[in-house]
Amino acid sequence: RQAPPPSAEQDRPNFAGISISSGNRVIFDKPRLTKEGLAEYYLAAAPLMLPHLANRPLSLLRLPEGMTGERFFQKHPGKGFPDALKVQDIEDAEGAATPYAYVTDAAGIIGAVQMGTVEFHIWGARRDRLDRPDRVVFDLDPDEGLSFAATRRAALDLRDRLADLGLASWAMLSGGKGIHIIVPLRRTAGWDTVKLFSKGVAMWVAGSQPERFTAEMSKAKRKGRIFIDWLRNERGATAIAPFSVRARPGAPVACPISWDELPRIRKASAFSTRQALARGWADVVPPPPQGLTAPVIEALDRALSSG
Ligand code: ATP
Ligand code: MN
Ligand code: MN
Image (cartoon, rainbow, N blue to C red):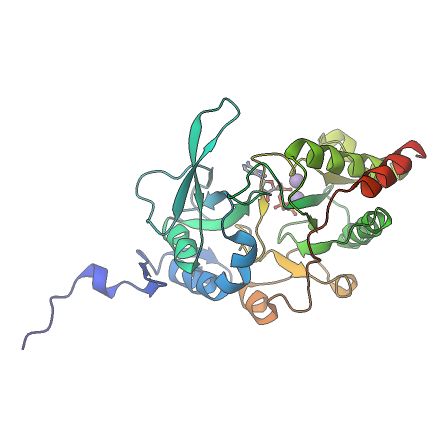
């Protein structure tokens, strides 16, 4: 009996049913991570990611040649995307149907990796109710030169301010320079309300400590401060997904971090792919979805008017 003819397709590594081409292409050089290695990471990370990644419109940061080549954000899937990466038409501001990618399973994640994706960015709403965000994210962006200790302290302060409004939150190291603070929402309010709320919180915190914080994006206003980036909370905006690898030196991972552990963390890029998998969600328990109820809004209103 004859052996089947060797074919490139058969020799390719396969993850979740998706075959990976150019598996030994080096994506990151230090620590060395090939395209196959990245797929292996994402297959293992999929169960950690999917509860927060599945069924949301995605923006993919692709680096088909790895860290040394070009990179681009892709919001709209093009030709040649594997079927595992699903597509949903979403109306843009002008009412035109525009295709967005989403995933429901590990095969979808690996399908994106096969297309050269390194980073997965998520909308703040799920695809069954795109007009009702299910999270608010405050993206703390420290000015260059600020210590991570200052960013850490800012995150803990913002947690306390949110708690003053009656809202519980969880935190994630971005894998870059900052920390994201996330409030899970019941899907009752629309984008306008959620965006206005997040702006109100940022203005309150920045207004009461203008030497530490700014709610304005301009680099000039950021000098020596932390920008509380509330602009992630609008329709179509994205934030990095939990356990996404970052396309930054060392292949750091966006890692959920408990409030108790945060004071011991030395940088936002503290965790490698190996460490991220070993940790998983550790003892991070995102609070249940909360409503931007009248008492919450009234508490913010009082806080804003008392300075
Ligand atoms: P860092 O902690 O270093 O700030 P970050 O992921 O928070 O890392 P930001 O520059 O603050 O990076 O961006 C916040 C989010 O905004 C990103 O995670 C991404 O989802 C989105 N974003 C930023 N720049 C772009 C862009 N050019 N195209 C699409 N989305 C972007
Ligand atoms: Mn940021
Ligand atoms: Mn930002």
